[in-house]
Length: 463
Figure: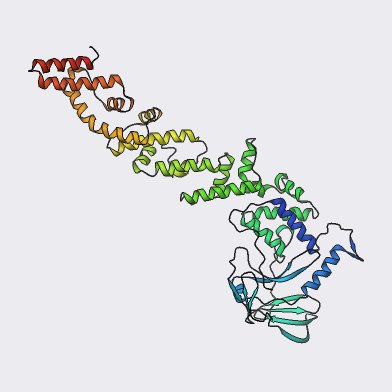
């Protein structure tokens, strides 16, 4: 049957459990005869490894299925895959990790298979070109099969086989050493693919070195060496650099699967705020090393994206007030671990107040803006208040200039104290200027004049 070896991970944030992976490797090794759970076990006169090897050879003598056209286009190959213990297995169409599986696949014989490898139409019979008993390289050829990629697979009577390219030259399969196996071994290639998918090629290489140095080592011991032995742990510490930083600070570290899950949460948050450039291992390590969880990161990005960058005047005020923090991308600056979230909230509030002034053609400074923010002035309150100040300030300054005898100097701060702080003294000064103006134009009338004087005295607190 043409089947696909299921990819163990889909790249969508699945949790990774090193212990489970290493147990899988051990089970595969037992099945492949590389390792026995009981090296002294006998099956008749055979060891367990010898028995497994014999059983495997029997299953490998099965006729291979044809490589489908779609499989060949996707880079798939026909591989012998273990399907149970004791060397049991079968040939399957194996796709590269990450390659999409075609909905339908068609062989040269006209057989059509669905995505799960079930026969949809056709006889299921494979086109096999048998040959007379011939010898090559000292071996007797049992059969040869022309593959859809123009290669030929030759099976010998001793159970071995080789693949020839279009010119008839043997194709040498590239051998790697993932986790103590090679890429021709589906069990090891799948596990290595998992680690590569999580950007852990270096970790895979370390595990391979440990297995080479200690062939019979247990899973827990592999993890101990991988994390704590200086001969092997450099790639691990580099990959989980956030944990290394937590260790320096004497703080609890994240488990491997929790670490990877948090990275995925960060990635999703950054993409949702359109700052994909921040989605990298270095940023993740910084955030984890400073104990910033997804909630903290989201709150910080909301300040930068929703509060500061949403209004050009607010962003301009923020850059003027806090040049060292805003030198670059403001959203990225919000992730500065040296800046605590409450402090960022206060700075954002000050920038919103400063932006309200800029929107009305007025200016303010960081001291005044932070003072108003500390007083509880919100963005909405600042916008409404500054609109009033923009209207009242010119008139108040004019009255102050023509009524110097009052000793009142009307400034922007006077208007701010009246508008935002309901300051009684500032309000009395404004009332005095208004009363003086009224008195100036109604002085000829005794009654009006008296009222004006009374207003002035009342405003000044004299009556």
